[in-house]
Length: 218
Image (cartoon, rainbow, N blue to C red; front, side, top):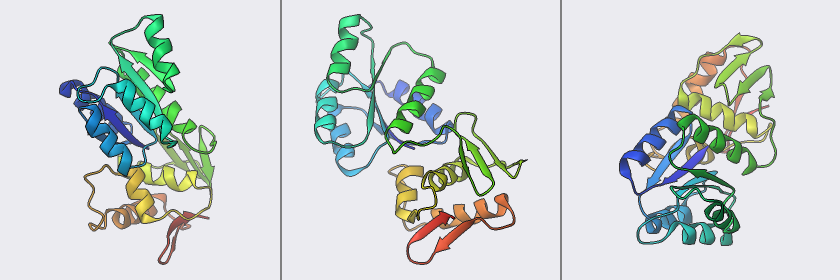
């Protein structure tokens, strides 16, 4: 999934990003509310992890503008204020979930994964197609009962193809969901990842190229 982490404490922001990347998500960072709104305007995120007390533009205003923009991104609001009134206020602004600091990274990752499922059309927790079973929570992939060890990017690309449920996914869509904003669209990263994925999934071939359009698992 594509995640935006908005946190002005840079060490904490980097730690959150590193943890979520280890969970195979593509993560962008913003350290103030203004930068967050700029990124939200140009990128489609599945989840925004949003600190409430931000410089330049307060996190409440970022949340409000994101909700009013009618984008599909879900908001996980972070704050040091853990009182009931603070939680109610955050949720009333349109946040989908609320996590008080300090928090445990495994819990944050689990909440991000749950929100990401809600940002898209309903999909089962475990994805299955063409003999492939992918479990996002366990980060495991099996093909016809055989465990398939995948890199983070290979796992993320396969998850996007399975979520498409037989529809074609373009290289641009894969870049959007599996890589962060620093990805160079001209590097051939998607094509190379698809080649490695095909090799690891083994025969019979299951990832189909639709010339000029993209890729699919039929």
